[in-house]
Structures are given as structure tokens and as C-alpha cells.
Length: 171
Ligand SMILES: Nc1ncnc2c1ncn2[C@@H]1O[C@H](COP(=O)(O)OP(=O)(O)O)[C@@H](O)[C@H]1O
Ligand SMILES: [Mg+2]
Image (cartoon, rainbow, N blue to C red):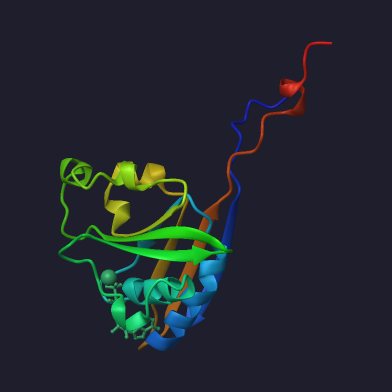
């Protein structure tokens, strides 16, 4: 018998793009990995392409065209209504760069927004412990030389189910 705590498995995907347009294309493909309810942190320095990636994801959900997706820098949150695998989905795009405290974050009412049909993509979410706890994964964008970017997607699997004997009645 092992005393080790169950370790949640993760799926990790790595991509490279060499232009904004390629990152939008990648966003369209990554939409297929999404499954509400889900909160993902988008991590990377300013100008690496977090918002650019969201443009592709939003487009794949038939929620808006890339030109219509802008950074929620001042409004903090943008909401899109879309469709994923034939079901309605709400996509929330947040940018918490300008937020400093958990208290300010609370006033956004994020918990109420995260309904079963919701996906939240949160730029600068890693700044907040409460967001790190809620996140089921992250997308990290790193600048390489020039316009090249390395994009790493890590999706946590739900924890392993309890051992089968736990579900059986006592014999
Ligand atoms: N490979 C790339 N992927 C994403 N954006 C790129 C890439 N190469 C150049 N860019 C440009 O970098 C900028 C990224 O801006 P943005 O997506 O707003 O960044 P962030 O949201 O991370 O601050 C855009 O002007 C985009 O066209
Ligand atoms: Mg941005």
C-alpha cells in the first residue's frame, strides 16, 4: 500500500508559431481542447500574443470575428456567446494586469459567471491565488527570436476516481 497522495495527471501540448496570424490559427485549433466549465490561465509577457490567441478561440466558437476581439485591458472582462460541439457556450476573456488585490478581483463576481456552460480565459490570472486554485490548466506563451513563439498548453485531468472497492457495498 502506498501513502502517496493521488497525483492529477496532466495533458501537455507544445506548439510553435511564427506570426500573429499563425497564433490565431492555433487558437482555432485549441478550441477543440476546451470543455466547459473551465478556467484557463493565459501566461506570458506583455505583447507575446495572449489576446491574439483568444481571437482564434473566439472565432472557432462562432462568437465573433478576430477583429472584434480586443483586449479587456480597462473593462477587465469581455463576454462572448458561442457554440462548442453543438452546445451553447459562454466565453469570458479577462485581463487582470491592472488588478492588484484579491479584494478587487472579488468585485468582478467571477464565481457567479462560471456557470456549467462557461469557459474563462484569464490573462495575468497567475497573479492571484484564488484564480490559480480555480484553474484547470494554463496556456503559456514565450517569445523566442523575432515573431516566433512557443505555446505550451497544460490541461489538468480531473483527479483519479476513488478506488473501485470504495464504491462497493460491504460484502
Ligand atoms: N507568433 C506570434 N504570435 C502572436 N502574436 C504575434 C506573433 N508574432 C507577432 N505577434 C504580434 O504581437 C502582438 C501580440 O499582442 P497581444 O496578443 O495583444 O499580446 P498580449 O495579449 O500577450 O499582451 C500582436 O501585435 C501580434 O500581431
Ligand atoms: Mg492581452
